[in-house]
Length: 542
Ligand code: C2E
Ligand code: CA
Ligand code: CA
Image 1 (cartoon, rainbow, N blue to C red):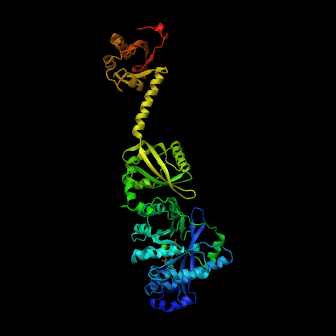
Image 2: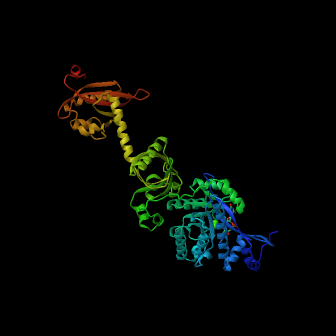
Image 3: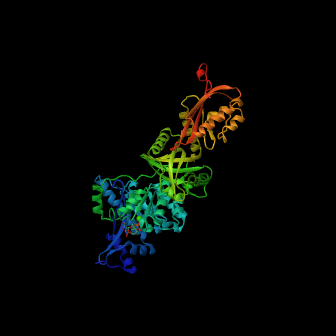
């Protein structure tokens, strides 16, 4: 029969609880949701009173904290964990790292870290098997104190986990200022709609942690949906009822023997030149540079052909995003809008950059869909470079430039050039097309370059008669050709005309294009230089 105890009853029974093991430890596994393997466990304190039964941490821990007794309970837990690990090691069972909670009141005690270090030495436990969980609210007592305790723990080699991240005490500042090794993100603080605000906060924290190279453990995960969601945003480490409730030492030992283990790996190892902390500081020089001086830029991770955006700057949004907001882009990937062919081009470029360890570039076409403008095709030139890596994951920095306008102009030119070539049936010719109705003429680029023809000619052929491309003595003949084409009297017309002031003989030929009703539409003209002997028998067919 369990019955809640009064504060006085708790205090009166405390000494006995420590002495006789009424206060003891349960263990809750931490699991890699991608592999199902165990990466560690958390030690959680329990108190079973011989008379009143099970007492809950939420009831007795505040009482112990208030009465300055929590450090004794915490040291008892630490010793019990060391003792358990010692027994594992003695029988050659490889344990997993066990995290022990440190109350914020422990932080205020001068010698607390020395005390746990003494216990670790007494049981001769390699420090890699012991992590310390420090709650986010510890910082309420002042950052300097927490910082110095973290420093001390790090000097002894302990991994420090930031507990209850997201519970609200200016979380993002803490991440920036405190050197924690692991972040524990409690799903219960962010409960509610995962796709909504809660999801946005979780996502932002996970992305930020990734950038800092800090692994994240999602705590309080009760459903597969929650676990899958966390995995989908890049947080695969899970602790919660979904995998296991806190279990007794015996059951935990069975789990250690039954379940495969694997180490927890940091998300990414940044190249030393980059100060990741500063990068998130909105007032830092790094951020200033990223946002203002580098043009469109994006930072993303790349692993096995898959990429995930961590950060974009405002210019990136402008170059690529139409009117997508930054967050929407963060939720997508760098392959956004690319078809398979363009994806391949992009992936190949990333692989080249990995191999060359240098900047590589490519151009890819993407279809962007914006809420107001609908679909659009854009061409993005990307310069990519690796800036960090772990065993199999790369961190990329990419500058981008929207080259759609240049590309489209080039493509249009290329297209008309191709059509001219086709119509002319000759290899090395000048070519142009004339709308026989509107008398608008488009020359090929060689006409523009060599013959000084403007890119668009209106009221064709008059301007070219005026500027002497067509000599005056052939002007009327030529006007007559245009009239006959306009009326659709002929499908081809050709003849030798001496062109330009040099009166160089060209074989000029027209092919008429008609619409589906047979009405004249366009005339494709070509002019081929007459070389010796050629065309002699064709002299003036007019
Ligand atoms: P905590 O450090 O955040 O520990 C996680 C709490 O969440 C544990 O509650 C655990 O049983 C519970 N939990 C784990 N998975 C789930 C889940 O999927 N759903 C739900 N609803 N809960 C889950 P517990 O054991 O009752 O401990 C409560 C708090 O008491 C701890 O929160 C910690 O702040 C404190 N505490 C526990 N053991 C110790 C200790 O040895 N020393 C100190 N100083 N504090 C401790
Ligand atoms: Ca904890
Ligand atoms: Ca927690």
